[in-house]
Image (cartoon, rainbow, N blue to C red; front, side):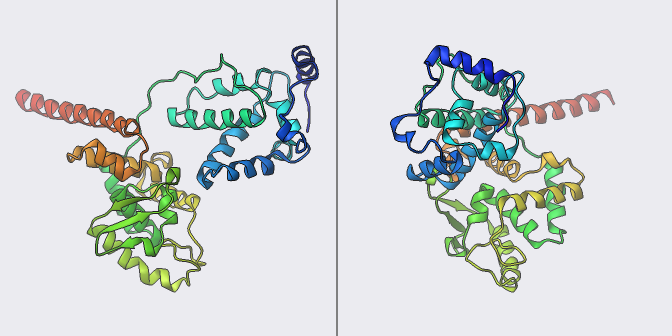
Length: 336
């Protein structure tokens, strides 16, 4: 691992504060020489963290570890991932300033992203036997509302999906708009969890390790029935509903690539179309049709209704836009 000119000053400060610098807790002393990623992943698995939570933690922690201090070289991915537990502690010691820089760099991130990354960092710091600095708090940022597609954009996306060369595209778009499934839940959905007669599906081990029931309309039934013969022709390896041409389970990143292609075909920016944006459209559509927040919370699988409440803000925006368009038309008619 490379070290920059700042490290000598950093070590001197640490020695003044700690004598020999920060120390690993007794439970980690004998594992200090081991690779941090494998050791920490084992800890997360021992605690029963879901695979999605483990991935979320690692994404945030990699950003933290890569954050350079003033005068310090930028480390490579290999250097970051091959650090020992001891080297990791030396690098992210809570009072050397790296945590401060990293937290302040997230000012433009969404509240949910900041919350998830802070939780990951806090967990890692505690695992290393250190304490989170009391002065370090969540960066203040403006309130960000979930992004949704306009009615026109949604129509264009549906048309592009219906005409797509990839049969998975139409099914994925239809199901997310019809059920509000997260892309990870859609990819994990198995045939045995789908009841076409009941127009429902059971999400097993969703976010937070919870199961929940999702409902859908005849549009999803028709899309699934049209897809099943094509699915069977791909000699699927398992029971997943969505499979690749080779028969393997479709991954979330493959669904996003599909969305990118659909965005190109629909003539809208790629960043505007993601599986999660379609999920937001599902939620706002329910709200605008009179569904109550508690029902939407259950359908979306939100742990807290506070997460669902943000869609009220979108609905208010929609009302304002409708009112503005209506009044502008009325004024134009009066003038003519």
